[in-house]
Length: 402
Image (tube, rainbow, N blue to C red; front, side, top):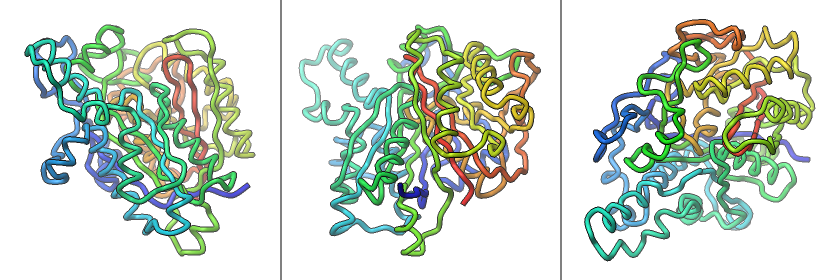
């Protein structure tokens, strides 16, 4: 079994258009949630979200490329460029034949679909762009990453709602650990902040109209975000041989299914996923110092997740630092675990734990150290990244300081 490390990271999200910008915002507890700006937003009940700001697609891509790139693909390609540049890798020969891409997204090209439905149903047009299907398909971003960087090994997309990115990164980890591939580009993206994307979520009645306050007693729902997080996962020996900078080590992964309810989370399913990640990594629960929580800001999710953490970690739970960065960058749905992995890397590499901002009142059902409002200096040896999705799809990654 080979060791797996992360040698590159890239992102586009509401906190920044790069990793340094995003980590600086996380350290400062910046809120990326603002009033939404897109067509027909006045018809929505929910008018806030963590929308990407300052991303000039016309300056980044040609007109021909934009005909093929939905925003979720645009975000992915920009994040991948940053990650691969940091890694210093060039894909040619045998490395290109064996390296691949596995990305997560829940909805794929939602904006493209929304625009096309509007054209046909609202505007009465009888034709749509000939590239609508390759633009909106969930696997579009993975395909374009593989084509752009000559990655000819295993490449595919995972779609498991809000756990999509963690499932994708877990698959990349498993492929490298087994020897199937020496390098994998992995992570995820989402861009649902359009009229149809937000209107669909409104129907669930889980959205907040004013703020995301995970673990706070007065929390009243989640807030959508958008963006991408992309990483270079690499065989440790291969990375060491070429002198690559190692951001952290991926040491464990587990996934479980609640097999119970399509929307309500399960304490048992979440607990089994965390225990599984610890067992897969071969580490004791006392070794964990930080958990990036799923922490959506809904009453059900936060309460169940805190109960699962207490169940798994016992007396050690009171010593853990736990935060939800969704309070800053919103819930990026299928891309959320990828952006949140940056907070784990920051904790392990830089010794800074991102805060849970918007915290206003303690909740006895969430009586853990949720790092309220202000970042914390700490030196965790091991961090967990939790993702618990609709449909009871749970995926947890374990990472260790390099």
